[in-house]
Amino acid sequence: QVQLVESGGGLVQAGGSLRLSCVASGSIFSINAMGWYRQAPGKQRELVAVITSGGSTNYAVSVKGRFTISRDNAKNTVYLQMNSLKPEDTAVYYCHIDKVIYYSGSFLRTEYDSWGQGTQVTVSS
Image (cartoon, rainbow, N blue to C red; front, side):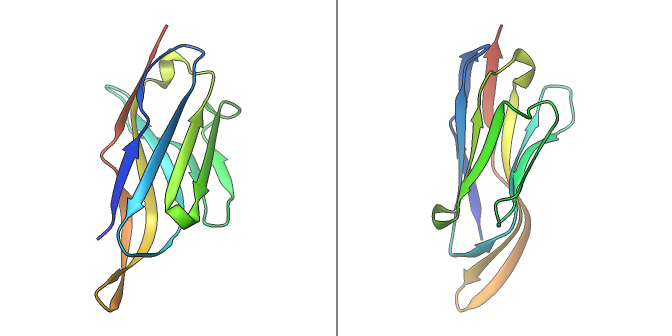
């Protein structure tokens, strides 16, 4: 089984920066796309950014030019650098993996749609 643990959230003033990290733990063989989603109070969860195993990225229009997603495959870690933060960026941010292959004993197993527990980002005006 694979676990995702996020860190780096917190309280920041508008215009400030934060860097989120998400580590996937377990006996991992390979990870497909890794991404970040967010959910503000009373709103649906939305995609923020995604990065494929090959390094291709895609961003929500609302964060393009301000946020940068990256990953370190050797560390099974995905990052989200958030600059020029706005109050409307306030949300719980969730790490997501669409497909991960991991060792379970001598077998390889596949897990789909893995989520972290979320980390709160609050941007004050």
